[in-house]
Amino acid sequence: MSLKDYIFRKPVEFAIQCTEIEGICHIVYPKGHFDAATSGDAEKTIIEIVEKANSLIFNLNELQYVSSAGLRVFLVVAKKMKVKNCPLHFCCLNQTVKQVFEISNFHTILEIHDSENDALDKIKLKTQKCSQ
Amino acid sequence: MNNTEGFNDSERQKALRMSFIAGLFDVIITVAAFAFSNSSVLLADFLKTTIEFIAVLLSLLAMRKVCKGADSNFEYGLGKLENLPSIFVGTTMALSFMIITGMAFKNIIHPEHITGFGLWISIFSQTLYFFINGMLSLKNSRAAKLGASPIMAAQARLFLTRFIGNLFILLSLVLSMSLKDFHWSVYIDPAASLMIAFAIFLSTIGIFKNSFMDLLDKTLEENHQIIILGELALCFNEYEQIHGIRSRRSGNKVYIEIFIEFDPEKKVSEITQTIAKLSSSISQKIAGSSVTIGVTPPATA
View 1 (tube, rainbow over the protein chains, first blue to last red):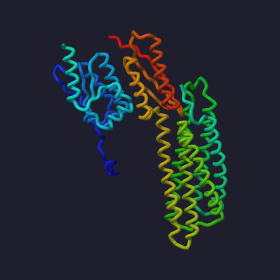
View 2 (view 1 turned 60 degrees about the vertical axis):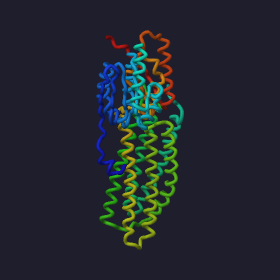
View 3 (view 1 turned 90 degrees about the horizontal axis):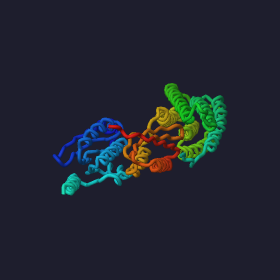
View 4 (view 1 turned 45 degrees about the vertical axis):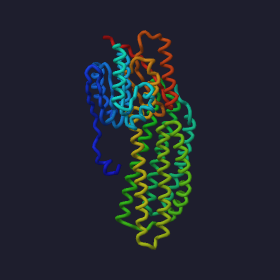
C-alpha cells in the first residue's frame, strides 16, 4: 500500500446479510472488518439470527479480517448452537481469517469447509439421518 | 499466578541507579561545555540533559515506591505509578524537541561560527557518552522486554534518543570546526539539531501512546486477547457460556477477568478444576498476568 493510499484510504465497513434456505438452515454473510468497533452491533444481529435458526452456516467469503472481539462473538454463537444441539458450520475463509482461526485454536472446535455447498451437504445429510 | 521470569524489581532498580549516575555526570559536563562556548546547540544539549536527568530521578523514586509495595489503600498495587514518570519523560522530550527546533531556526536566520573551549569538552564527552548511552539503551531495552515494564521501555527509548543525539552533536561539532573556511558550514549545527529534534519527536509519540493507553485501562494487545480466546477454545466443552472478558495493565502487571457460566448439574470440584486449569494456562502464556475467573449463574427463563 502506498503512502497516498494509506492516508486517503476509506474505513472498511462491516455488514451482515442473512438468507434462509427454507426448512434447512440460515446462512450468514459477514462482510468487511469484524473487530472491536463493529462487534457490539454485530453480536446483537447475529444472536437474533441464532435464536430462530435450526442450523447455521457462516459464509466468510467477504470477511476481510476478524479480531479477538469478532472471535469472541463466534465463540458465544458456537456455545448457543451447542446448547440448542443445532449444527454450526463455517465456510470460505480467506487466508488471513484462516490463520486467525488456527492461532486461536478455533479450528479445533468449529466445523470449517472450503465451500458453502460442502457445508450445506453436511447439514442436509444430518437432517436426513435425523428424519430416518 | 504471576510470572516472575525475566528482570526482577531489584535488577530494574539497579539499571535505573546506573542511569541516574550517568545522567548526573552528563549534566555536569554539558553545563561546562555550554558555559565555555557560544554554541546554541550546546545550550540545547544542556537543557535537554537536565530535563532528562530529572525524569530519571522521578522514575527511580517511583520504582522504589512500587518495589516497597502498596498498603491496603492500593489493593491492585502501585503499578500505574510507573506510567506517571513515563509521561513526564515524554513531556520533557517534547520540551527538548521544541527547544532544539527553536534554536535550530534561530541559527538558520542568524548564522555564526561556533568557538570556545567548551566545544572540546563537548567533543570529548559526546564520544564518551556515545558508548555509555548505547550500552544503557541495550540494557534497558532487554529489561523492558523481559519484565514488560513501561518505565524500562521509556528509559530504553530515552537512551536510544540520547545515543543518536550524541552522534549527531559530535558530527555537527567536528564538521563545523573542520570546515569553518566554507561559508555554508555555519548551517551544519542547525541542520544536525533538526535531525536530533525529529528523532526525539518520534520517541515522544511512542512514550505518550503507551503510557496514556495504560492509564486509561486499555484492554490488552490483540496477541494477548487471542491467547485468552485460544485457551477458552481449548476448554470449550467444560463450560456452558462465556459472558465477558475484561483486561487491563497496571505497570508490569496484567489483570484479566473472565466471566463464564457452567452447567448447574456440574460438581463444584469439576468447576474448580476447570477454573484452575484455565487460569494457570493463561498465566503461563501472558507474562505478569493475574487471572480471575468469575462464575456467572445461568439466566432464569
